[in-house]
Image 1 (cartoon, rainbow, N blue to C red):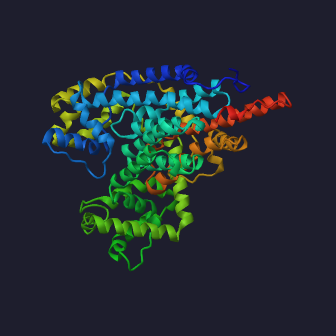
Image 2: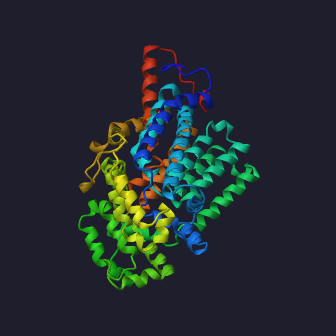
Image 3: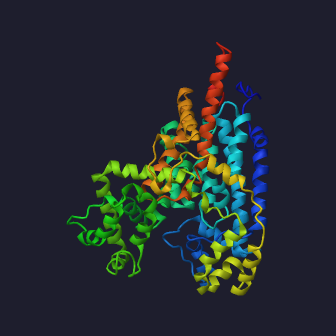
Length: 509
């Protein structure tokens, strides 16, 4: 295989695995260094809600599948106490294995859509191996790491598209099903994958029966997972500064929301950065919260609360569509910039300082903490003191590379993105999108751009500026940039060899 000409031999799994060897070695080494210095996964703000099913089952002999976290990940945590070692350590090891398994899948996708895989597969997979977001969120007890693996595996199964039928189509749909079964945030990814498959394998009623069964199961899971009021509550928090204060319908909600709406409007373009404060206020049941003692009773009436928040949010979007679009774009820009890099606590002292602060109140439920760490409070404190004294083993350069390879650069305190904020990586990514169209790689364009676009629009139009949500799709920016460079390399080759067109797209798809 050469760097300039399209390979005459087909891209195979054997070739893919060979090209992924540098990334796999890098990934194993980085994750081993992290586990040596910090063996336990981070028990974060959302972790205890995922653990609730395991806690209720093992400590109270009750099977409780909370509406908010109804998915496969809590069931995975149920199994952890059956295995040797603490739950925190087992989850860390398992989720880092998920990260390793994702690398060959990303390599297969890259090799299937680029014309020079010998060059681009090592680059995209090495980025996936060292990106600090993936490394950190694999080390936290949340569902993002298995969602990431499910998405890249489903996407890998889509290529080559000419083989996407019969048993392979069933495997593709089954893996896409995992995206919605693991976490509600996987719904946009699932929708993008299914739309791409439907466009390229139309009509869907000619798909095999097993495919229809998997699609039906996916729809059922979509409707029966996630909190009924969570989506409308998040959407209201995203539209809060645009909500109408005056109005007859849900007047009691408007009256109580009026002060915070005015506060949100005071600095409209900075609202996406401040949205987290308002989001918590909208869902609190604390009478001392930002909205006062009259708000919690409204939140407890779940059916009316869901109807009111949904109506107010949709009314705001209809009234101010362009302002809503601008706020959504700003949230995407914030999360695609290098500003959230400070959340990665790879130094044991930073990690355990943050972990101890979060766990202080949790020791009021010692059974829950023993389920995570398999030790009492005194033994936990001794373990934390020993862990804090350990040296940092994860080098600083992965974080530096992660900061350098971002899509935009903005000041999060005044997050108003413009063309001047777009980085060279993003411009190369746009060039990669253009290259897909120029080469008529419509299948690759559909499977890459539909999940990416629907995910960004769906997640950040409803949710707030949480950088963690970028984890499943961050690698796609580098892949699109490689596609742009691939097109430039082809243009240089054609300029050097007039009349010779090495880009035989039919070999790829």
